[in-house]
Image (cartoon, rainbow, N blue to C red; front, side, top):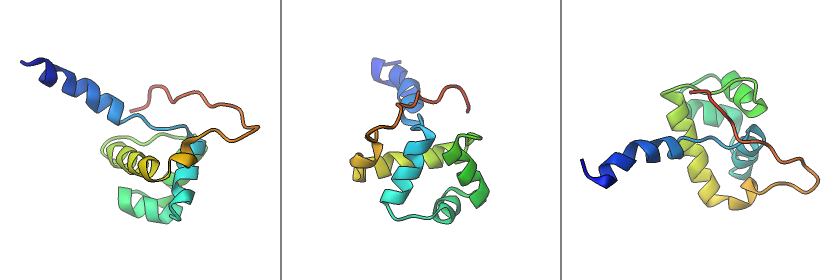
Length: 98
């Protein structure tokens, strides 16, 4: 196995890291999307997106993969939405969940 092939599983983990819940909502709003839009695209009920954005629950595969991909693409288009807001406490990155 080549070194690049050995790193693919590591890259897959990093590509699937979700931003903090507050940032998830800001990314969605920056794109002008509703929670229903996101839910329909990812294949879940709107209430799941509400809970993900509040940090009450975490998406699981395969929805997690689709949601992470969506958020990553939105972050590329709207980098300002990922920046901490003035006066807002910094959020710790999400741990566990899968």
